Length: 223
Figure 1 (tube, rainbow, N blue to C red):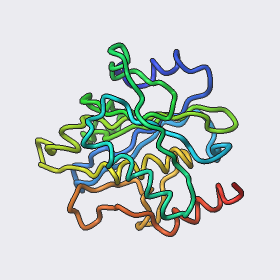
Figure 2: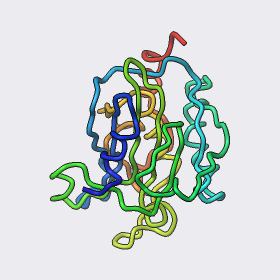
Figure 3: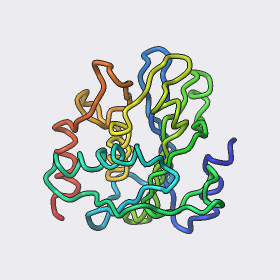
Figure 4: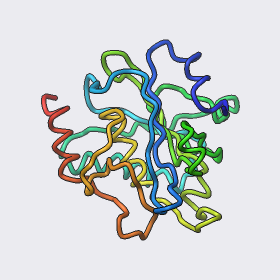
């Protein structure tokens, strides 16, 4: 197992940890299938909003606005300040290893390939696009997001297909996991379906569905 996967986080984090691997490439559909390993119960939420997040200093400047747009889409569509951008998280050289998490609601990019989390992933050749780490006990308290194999997945295109994936779309999906935990939606219009598609595909998602809005209202409508 690659060091990036789970082991480092158990040593760093004193609280219970959730790990989600989202966006595994499905060779049959050319879509992206999200898988998760869940280490505490579903149904938890953040105690208060907005969630203040930062973007790692290692993220290329030209892509930071697209990351922000993924979070801002939630704010605009649910008409509430759900996510608030708090600037850049400076990383020292020792912080740039792909197994490093800071537990401060930081979005990282890495050229590291996503590690596979199940025998099904290994046998199917699915390659994860990203991973969300959530930390907490009765409430979610902190989170980090990694976007894997950044150049191939989001800039130049995957060598075998040429496909590139929308940073905005993937961040919207990961932001949904930050809010709600591991569940995926059966509503085909939801950003939280288990399959994500590359740029230009007719099923590419860049908006929230009505079920996403309803779930937000159910979970956070009292805030």
